[in-house]
Length: 350
Image 1 (tube, rainbow, N blue to C red):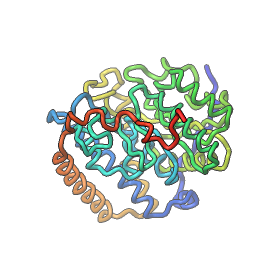
Image 2 (cartoon, helix red, strand yellow):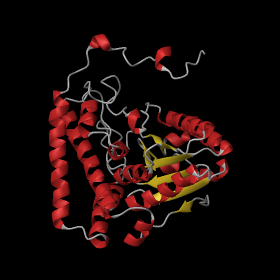
Image 3 (tube, rainbow, N blue to C red):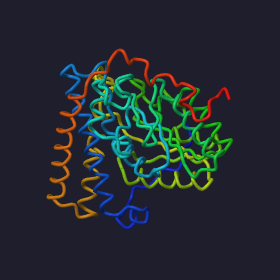
């Protein structure tokens, strides 16, 4: 049996601890709202898919709202990230407008990719986000490249790279972490360990107890955190990001949760034991945080109702606006796909 070497993070105990981490009550309510909004967007995505309005398949991050929102809340305004298809909360927290996400789902011209890429292959570069590609760990070297650029330019910025535990089996993951460790770059690696790489369980994916155990071999710290505890995720991400910003090098954070739906809408996840689903459903990240707010931050019925109503209103308006967005003109197919020398600040051939 392999012995764990990564540090296992403790849960957040009190409002005092979270204040020391830089969050006030208004921040806490904002985090809760972002989690509710994240789930609401993906639930409406399911409806659009069943209505035949979303081309291709459809992927969600149900159960990962705490991991995505927690990390994104810890990022600085000038930091960059490469969120994946389970990380919708990153887009919401960084400020992507819900109607543009719904437009993206439907392939409309007002989506972040302007109808030119898959329905979850999106990001707004103006908000420090870099769009994913299907071969998911391929984004790790991209984030590491950003971190190297920050180092060369002497900028106090950090790159955050997301990947799943299944993607950790690919060479891109090793190459990105090895280079980052050697150069001690300002990058934080976040593994969304949702326990199933499609239908493959973790014990058939890697031989260590935790993905984060690998960090020691690359020369930096590994941390395992409960991915359903948004405040614990935030605390550990904040520490890692600020450590990187101050020249302390990379960190690998393994956010442990369960993928509460199939790999995509075509997958009913029959291979996941029913009792496993039931156990993790009892730890639903939104319900867990709502209870914490009730006990520690005096969340009232009125505040909860107001948040729920405002999110519902926002999503209804977002859906109407997204459906009014036109389909892209086929004549513009190649616009914005290939860069020209004039588009580049420092053309590579000069």
